[in-house]
Length: 231
Image 1 (cartoon, rainbow, N blue to C red):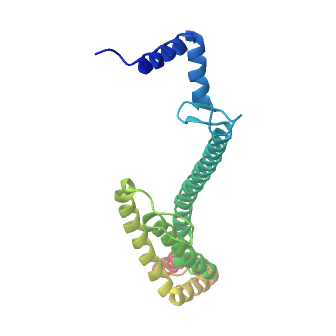
Image 2: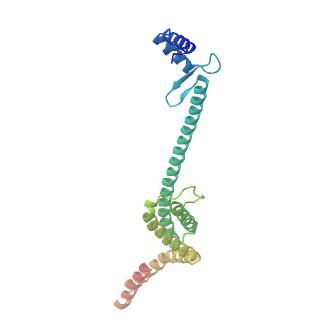
Image 3: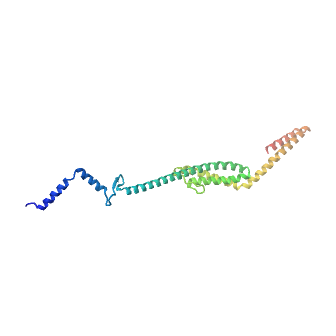
């Protein structure tokens, strides 16, 4: 069958229209079609990771990204400061526990000698020692310290047992406070009188020697001097 005359003329017009464009013009028109949007004068362009968007859209996305990055930076700095502060508090609590243990040993020794002021120090140092050890083991709001990591659990158990023993010993000392103070007072009285006893015993000994007393009496006077020194 013979080709239709209308179809042939349309094909010829299409071929001539496509041949009239140079390759560069085709490329420019394709690029323009990619850049143009529905509104004239607004263009889209591509950014890695953001795709093809308008300049305003890119600015909005980059602005929000900068704000989020800034907030994350602030949170990271705050977390680092909090962690450093908590570590410093834990180190300070450990040092405080060591100081209080030494203070407890010194004040307990003074309390056993009947010094009234030492009993208050025994009570305070024992309480602070127990609180700091408890804070390191389980955390404590009183001393403002968090619990240490599990890797320190073995050492904390040993320290906790020693602190508990020291606390019990301090309680025993405090329970005998009145008796220890009274005993100290009696010892002071005995020490104050021992000098007088020694002088009196020496005077007796010298007198027996001067009067030519028998040797057994002189020996007894010398033994009296020795006994006053032992007291």
